[in-house]
Length: 185
Image (cartoon, rainbow, N blue to C red):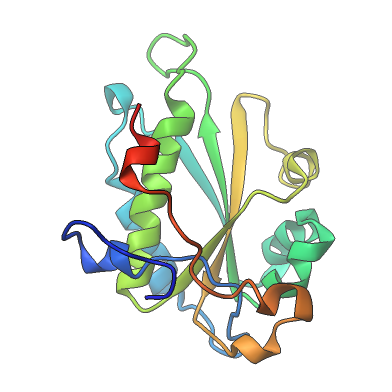
């Protein structure tokens, strides 16, 4: 794969993972497939088994438009072709004693990782988006301050790279990774 060199044998799903932007707007995501992604996500490990992650699904309809409208304009250009979105949240406090759960973002990220790998296993692509208006999302879905609003995930099937605008077409490839020695302290 372009820009990817593996020093060790790892899962093929991980080797092939990247974040494309070229979605096929004509290939819908079946509700059953979307729910299977949530099924994978719910089996992620979490601190004290709190499972702080929460998901807002948008497979068309009003939720889709609400999420799309929170995206930065440059992300709306390509993400509007994705047939589904998921907004990821995480509950900030433990349920059993209401103390701060400093692992809530870590746990939600692990859950997203499971969701992402299941999407790939099913032949779908995903792209996590940090360029969105958190407060607009909070307002649009009436999300309390008890939850961190983390990311939007665009979900669908790979389309035609040539359909991307000029800004994004040059970035439509797997990005390089740092060497192992560069991430170890």
